[in-house]
Image (cartoon, rainbow, N blue to C red; front, side, top):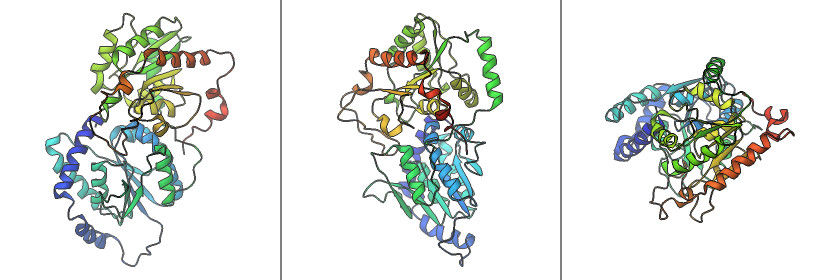
Length: 414
């Protein structure tokens, strides 16, 4: 299931919920809880069964990884189940962050009400002590958490609202880094302290071997500096996309450096943007957009020297795999979505008084009065100078900070 499909499903799920699909959830939950939960159980006892809803995007899953680890360590005897999508499940399938996952999918929007009804009926058949929604203001995720009929439903509420009616509302702080916010709120529920800012995604060895063969088949120079480029932004907020024309000019200038090879990546549902960018270039560049599985994509990112992209899940994945990045930001603030603050990551943006105006945790949908000038007017030379500065550090005889063993050692699994 793609982010584009989740966007449409989320919007429709919200309408269904407001039309009464969960209007009587309190009564239904009371009957189901009576059937599943022993009445003599101590209310202060540790939860035995925890459901976590995390549907939104690969980058969002990476940002939640520290919170997942805190939950796992804080409740070592609980059975933790994650409701997610197929791609998100692959990220941490072997990490031990949870015990199992349940995939949510729907073949088409016409069948959405039936899909939700069947899926939530399946969930409510199990006795959940806690259902935690880590997807912010997602209508679909909130609906799933409520319809699980857990003894406690936990999730974010905007200040002064009772929009979703959780039994335990988590306060949303718009000034906190999202990864820190998720971790902090899980800690408030009993999660254990975790020093590392994120958990490194799983990269299967079979995918590493496949990418090694691709590398050889394309006759790529092993001594070159490989710069990964993803011009897409995901369906949640296409206004985060820097113009394809500027990406093309950036890649052209990199290709002229001689020892730098720009490599293009991207999801298949956004291929038209990548292809347009390539057509604007006079130089040819390796392109794997729409050709890679998630595991192969991660294995390719591991081989890069630098990653350049819009504010998207790909940027988070590169950072989580220890690759230096140059992020291009507009309506969102890098201070909220960056995994860490360090010199291995540079951010290109134009400070605007109206920014940030967009976040997965507060979906602001009003029209932009400036035509997204924050991203459309971001100068090519500004981005290029950041990229060249990072590449200069990479080729410097003094080892750059992000290659030191002490820093690399913090990026470990549970």
